[in-house]
Length: 69
Image 1 (cartoon, one colour):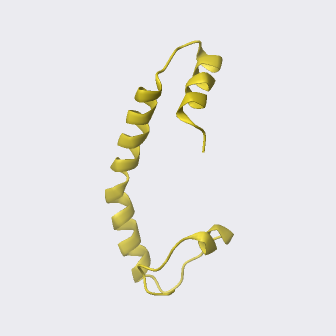
Image 2 (cartoon, rainbow, N blue to C red):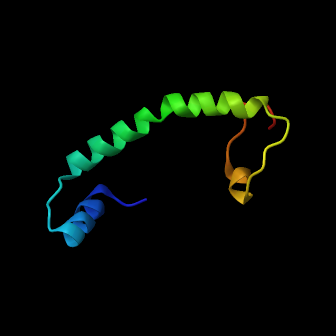
């Protein structure tokens, strides 16, 4: 995870545009919040499945809310 200041510097290096850390924070926060509805629906659908195919990253996912751990 990059600090907001570093993201701002990276954007400047790539585009020569100054983007404040506040704008970056607001953008990332709004994007994160907009995924909550999708995530809730996805979790409900995944719980219904008998078999789920995934890679090793699934082992790092907290599944306490499902009741498996």
